[in-house]
Image 1: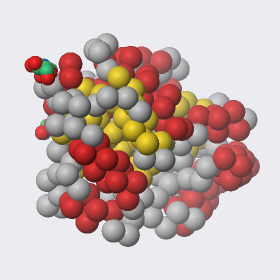
Image 2: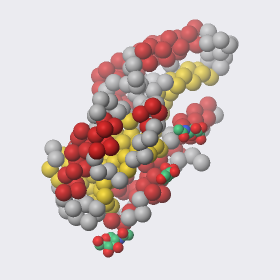
Image 3: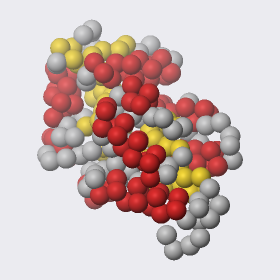
Length: 257
Ligand SMILES: *[C@@H]1O[C@H](CO)[C@@H](O)[C@H](O)[C@H]1NC(C)=O
Ligand SMILES: *[C@@H]1O[C@H](CO)[C@@H](O)[C@H](O)[C@H]1NC(C)=O
Ligand SMILES: CC(=O)N[C@H]1CO[C@H](CO)[C@@H](O)[C@@H]1O
């Protein structure tokens, strides 16, 4: 660690991405090192939590055994995962940033429809539609069956996790043939793998909006269609609030300035 952490509040930041298991072991070892060196409180800040369901529970247990007192994470893939953690956890959401982006960047808000590409995302989609406080319709492109009339609307596809982007590109085609005027995609975790970028470039999205909760800067170069919502300030503000023992609930509905 290189300096004394005795009696300090320590925040260890590592997203679950890239070489996922290496990027899990490093924060585990660092947490344990700081614990052994008598840090007073250890918080693991994991913008994109690795693994899902029962394996996510294992990761949470491993962090706890290593000495983490607290976890900060963002947009868990399955909300039931929240119940798995024994330690205090603060969950942040990409949603405020997403709403801000839509308000600032999509002028035809009144004529939008929010679309979920899977049934699991329907709740997230409904929440975004509600919070925009405009006449949004929630559709589902579940197994590519489009529910509801989307003709002449602007479609916003919302999903939390994408890898090869095959499904959302297919959904975009489906929406365009159903008569929407434009399709945007908003994706929380930009786990672009394999042919993802070429899929996006070939699909007819007006824009694909992602957060930077995992580093993908190399893949972002010259991809003008892909726009990034910067979540750094939300994490930074969460850390500041937790350090000062303030409530973080403000961040559930606001983007810090
Ligand atoms: C919404 O769509 C209707 C009919 O297609 C059109 O007349 C109206 O101008 C649109 N409103 C906006 C804000 O784009
Ligand atoms: C995100 O925001 C932070 C804080 O304002 C800034 O330091 C950082 O450079 C931004 N990152 C990107 C990729 O724009
Ligand atoms: C809130 C937000 O992310 N707004 C973005 C709207 O789009 C422009 C570029 O087209 C970005 O610079 C803004 O950050």
